[in-house]
Length: 87
Image (tube, rainbow, N blue to C red; front, side, top):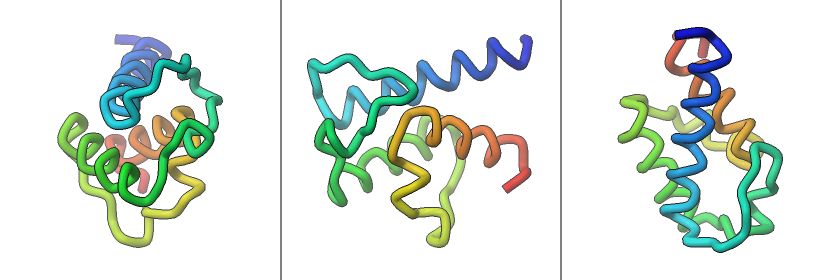
């Protein structure tokens, strides 16, 4: 699978997790500000648990900062770093 295809699959998986947690009718793109769609501290925890389950990763406490979870693109980049062992 090409690098671009892997990235597209991961992005789709992240969007699916976000949709499941936020239950929004608004379209979600890689650049959508998730906090404007209703992501807050409670739903962020649920999203993190969902991402960890879907991708088989664990986020460390020092990774749980707002900047890492503000958009699908940032989440996907962070997940990719975890999966590739560069984080």
